[in-house]
Amino acid sequence: FAIAFCSFVGKIANMQIVFVLAIVITASFLLLTSGFFLNQISFYLHTNKAINAMANYQLFALLVSGVASLIIFYLNPGSKVLLSMGNLKIAAVKEKWLGINGNANWFINGAQLLLFISLVTSIFIFITVRNQTSSISFNWSFVPYILLFAFSNAVAEELIYRYCIVGGLNLYCSKSFILITSAILFGLSHFFGMPNGIIGVLISAVLGYILCKATMETKGIFTAWFIHFVQDVIIFTGIFILHASNKSV
Image 1 (cartoon, rainbow, N blue to C red):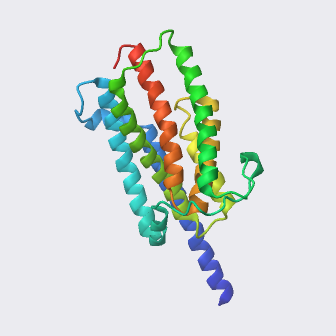
Image 2 (image 1 turned 180 degrees about the vertical axis):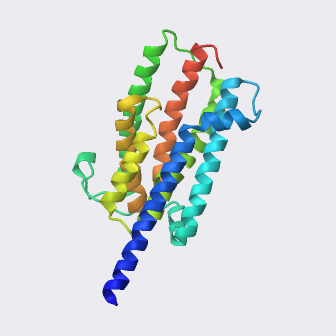
Image 3 (image 1 turned 120 degrees about the horizontal axis):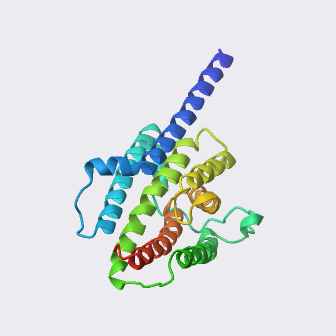
């Protein structure tokens, strides 16, 4: 009986893992193919075509991430604890390659990682912008849209790649498996991002690992979301500069 019970529990756990991964992969696929859906149901939200397109995508992403999160919450109601500030006073688990010595809490380590990651993101965005346009101009009227899109994009992606993965798998998988899964799926989803290609995937994968680690150890997605939000502010700034240079905004 004990063997049969363990086998049954094991099958349920395996099904849960497959189901959670299917949810995240499906959500990723929907975001990557959002253009098809938005062409069918696009809403008129702004007179500017570029801003309108971005706003439509953000609404679609929030819808997809919201549905995925509700499914995960139904599967594991206890995962709601992740939808919080988390405990930033807890010490970050030592990880040498990230420069985390295990002696400082997540408030300090989060701030240090935020500064370093933002510097790297800024360098890549600057190089990308310089390679694509000879004249860099910025319209300060873009700032509200940059902040709004960065906010919503970070919310949507943190719900999919941190809340859904951690909340859906933490009862069935090891910490290392969850970290690697989050890193890989987050990285692959940014193949067409900015920066794009293999470089974009690698940078996003490392960021995904860090954000997942923060989520798991603080037991909340706020730290991950805030770091993500700042990166998106930098990225959307680059996007709007390029659009302005191309006279499309």
